[in-house]
Length: 121
Image (tube, rainbow, N blue to C red):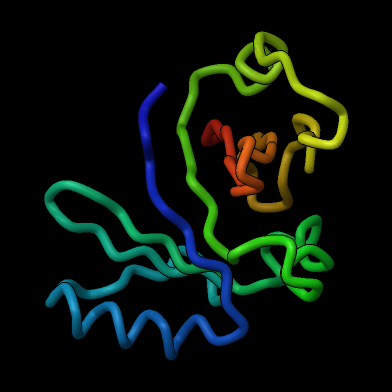
């Protein structure tokens, strides 16, 4: 398992990407119009439109999530998800293939932060 990125969920990806381009001096890449990544030598900051994470939109709207997701890239989402001992309320999204091809499982840590375990197609 490898920490892949910290993702900020926002309603204005272009605004946030421009801000973090200014902070880092790096140019954002745009794999999709609703998603940008700013890669530096040591870390990646991902910025996604709220529509990319529809399963948490209600949480964001009601203040139950900070809008930040800690993301770990794994080889096998289902296996990693299966080894976790989670209470049902900690599961936000059971392993699912997303429309953009990633396989993801989203859970809450004990403080309520969102954690995305994902594998690229």
